[in-house]
Image (cartoon, rainbow, N blue to C red; front, side, top):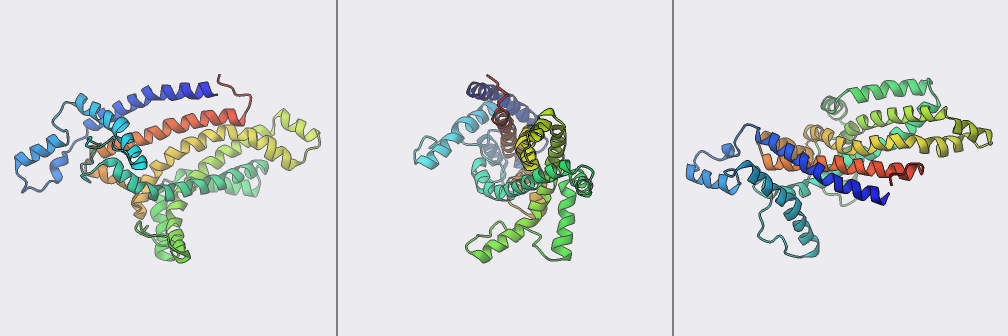
Length: 335
């Protein structure tokens, strides 16, 4: 397993380099000019110097090479300096946002906690609900619970977040007034009262993201459990006198989790994509909102950096899913 993990990590390096090249070349085709937001009163020679400072006057391959150095070498040094008080990155050029006029990763670090609060909580809630729902639906196949769960999950899986977000906002925030519509990013949790406010403002965005996650994972879990319930080892376990709870929870669920692990692992980067729309709808100043603002302002360094971070997450969680296969099923060996 260790050899497989090291081999996959080494293979991920050229994979990520190829992805970064594709992202860079595609964004170079994007129309627009970052200097379009500069006031008209700024002289043309000043604008030209600003373009040169941003690296816009250099050839494409030079820009790409500098971005690679900044992302893979300089930015890790910045993080190392922050935690250990060193000065390895002192005076080195970082990836600069055209919109925020500062290092992109600094803005990402500032907004990341808000995204983790919402996206992380939504995914945990979705997984905790979907797994038992999928298990019980499979065990009680064609029951009222199974039929109702199938109907609800099909709706949740089919309706996109940009529709469910405003719909739930109108129902629960505008009409009923139970929860706030917009997320207050500046809110600080200091006591029980402020914690309740934080909990209330997280309900709507978490509901929207968890709905789609629950629908997807519960369907996969149900199908996997149904497939294992008819296997010979289940009949053998029952014939040995084991209780139904032990048969289902110990034997069936463990083997059923193997394909579901892939869905859960790969769903983590995917939910960041869904959070892009959800954060805009509810005013969450996270990574998704930052991505949309960068797109609208033609901030190519920010868009490129965030898109590449999403690609890293996909490659990383693919590796995690493969490693977990061997943990859940001892028969799976890669070495």
